[in-house]
Image (cartoon, rainbow, N blue to C red; front, side):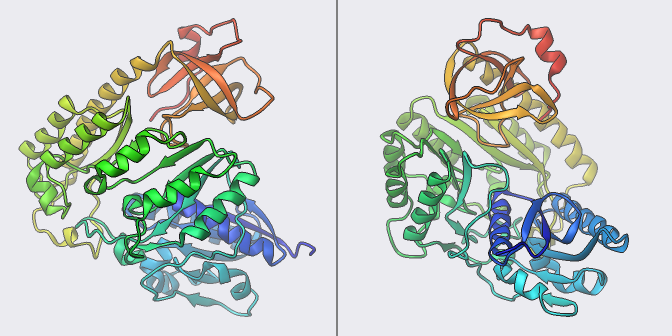
Length: 461
């Protein structure tokens, strides 16, 4: 089939949106269109938005307004807005943004090509409380083929009081295991060596289908030829069991990486957040992980400035990491989002206090992360080669098993060529720079000096 025209897709937000964007691209490719990424040009621009918190909403609105400006300048003919922001505010957006040609929420985005073929302007915001996964569509890679995201479910049955995800995506909806495995096999045949399992609540996979769930799925994924690393994201603490940890401990492919958001460490704040864990539960879960898993890599996220958070509550959060440090700590300011219950709490923390606590928590997190990074220096790891740094082609970016794609950092190898012969190479870590590392291929003799590494380093996290 010949290309009808060129469509540009702009994915915003989380990795789950990246997967959806690849499916949207698959729908357009199936319909005979050419697809480009992250540009505002061509026949149509499709913006897959995030609508989770204010910062993400602002980013999405900015992309929409830029696309409308390009349309008025004649650079594009049509603008499509899809994803979480469209689902959450579709009617308001449709009323205010008359230059947008089509609105589609989080369900039904596979029908965008046919909807665009109709004349006139449309606002197709489905009212479905649950999302579905268009199993028959073939994904078009966005960032690469070696490391891929694999969405196993969507929606969430947890009702954290600060979170709007259940209002946007509904309750937990797990994909059929057979479909997931079939997709994973196809991704492996296309070159994937790392599967990153994602969901709103990964540990709860399958509970809505009444079967054993995650470990059964993992057993099937482990059997796929070509897959070397399997990484799990978004592990809700209260769902981590001894059985699961024992399974991971004996696996040859599941990396010992635990992305476990704790959100806070004050009992009263956790209760108001409607979390199913208390500080002692979190400590026991962390201790359980360490007991089962040799040298696990721990990542978490926390929220500062939640309504009612006192200085004592914040102090508990700071002190929690004295005895239970995490290798990576993501710190987020509380964002009041309607219709989440916490948006109606009367004791909202002033913005200036939230900012001050955010800075203090970030400073504490950086100290912890830098300290734990020292244990990796002078050790050699199999690393997945990501290619050259786009902003400095003299730097090769490599990623060991304990770094998740895009969020945890890289080993930066200076003045080296991307090696041929496969995606993995032995890399020795030589120094830490912030939360990144410098390193060298084991056959490389010349080691970049610490001063050169710091001079060339541009990233900050």
